[in-house]
Length: 384
Image (tube, rainbow, N blue to C red):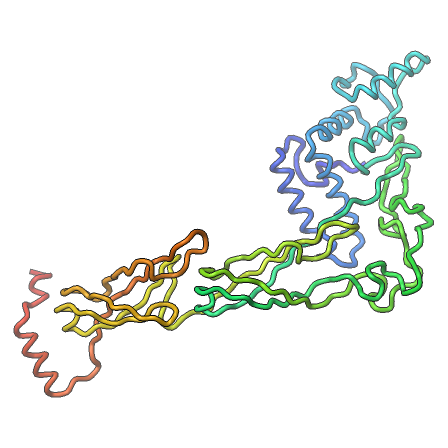
């Protein structure tokens, strides 16, 4: 039997968090949706699920470790005797051993405990004549789609249509994979169980049936539309509400709109990643918006009231204090972007930019020269 710890690539002392992380990594690597048509990856994916189902359950893991120490899963696991490292094993097995002792038996045969192992480890192993459970329902994979909205839409909110290309149930066969008028047949090799027994020493280990690949059924006349797969790729369009105040890179979860689940499992989720276009006037800084406000030299020196735009097309009067230097930031509270979580809005940060003319006429030049002569020398104040 495959060592579950080796399957997940973790030591036997691994914590539950380490086991969970290892399972997620292995499951992503060998997921059938990423390796379509690769039978080896499908088998590997099932092994990873079986290993995690056992090791993630403290009680199942404890029993599994006990049987491993007793040699139940090794090539030479022919039996054991009490006192040979068998403390703490399942009392039901000990009772069976006692019964054998009363009949003159000298050891306990592990081949007789298939039903017990099957109940403990799901369908990982079965005893002689045991039956494996049918494959469990699987949740569908999550999907991701990208959508771009304008800067104004990110502040006001919008409803957008998002196209998603994904596998969906075939309309011709309704997911059975069989041509109309026919139905899937019970697999003759595994008799519908989805697994076949393989003898390995004292165990009859269950392996996915190679003919039906664990489905338990085979399609003799495939559907002409989906070629027997039961699914078709198609583009679905969903209406997605983008909330006011959304930031670039925000992910919106649409529950149940991912890929369909398998064997009756729930569908995955759709994650819509929002991209926000840049704006000519405003830059975003969290929930605050920044705007550059050009002012003349006299307005900066003497102070002034200037009219500036606000998000959404409005305007507001901004007081520029006398003596404002280039780059000074003035805050207008509550005039920024809507807060995505919680009420209210951020602030509008007005950054003063002193406008210096590229060219001046004769009259302007004379006025500037006279002003320069009247003002104190700024270098003298700075450099002494």
